[in-house]
Length: 350
Image (cartoon, rainbow, N blue to C red; front, side, top):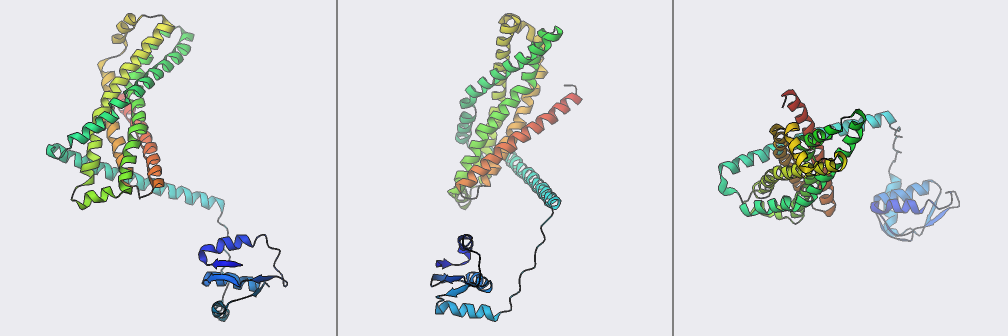
């Protein structure tokens, strides 16, 4: 055995001895090549010696450590009984519940801080940074129009095809227009838009702030007397709150266009006939329900994205991990809020 035998290399040393023949009275280990030896390494060699392995070539500076270990009354550690499987599962479940509770409280606290800074910005508009807000509006809004429009058209076509296939069995294929229009305006338009924005813009927010954390730029803002919440979080939240309703409205329009296309193909309705049917099946309240949810979703998506960006610790791995958590948490919260809104609007008969 040669090289360094310290606590950091014990695992490697043990693995190298696995292929060694079974220890016995004739086993000999040459340790003359060991250059560094600490107490854990000496304990490891002493344990081998007690198993019948003869150590040769022990250096004089290492022999003192062996003599000290031999003079001690060492007792083996008590055997630890294996933890039952059910206890491991209960422990893991409890830890998950504790972590979930901590995450919920952290999210509520951060959303409260963001809301407080938003109120402060409304009371003191001079603290806002229009250039930063306009940049984020352009990146999260205008540049997202093509992909959101395409997704809305595709979703409307899928709903239309599935609706016709099912309603035709009962002679009610004309109700496909009702299905597509109401679904797009009340639910699918804002929901698909929010999910796309969470994956596209939310991840960008987290990555941008996370990279600033790794470069100590956030700490530099604090040192200069600037508040990171005011400089980094508020502009992004305002930009997303402004753009998501517009994107949702655009998705509604594109979804209705997709419904017109599928109606012409499957129901043989001209665009004029389709447009004349729309006021009979949808109302302004259907449109407003979807647009009402958009700012709420936008606020939550932006707050979660910024929160996880500020949680980055300083490595590229941390940036990727927090970005993934941000997107997953944002989409999950959007779905939960959408379900709660559906129940609320049903109770209110909206």
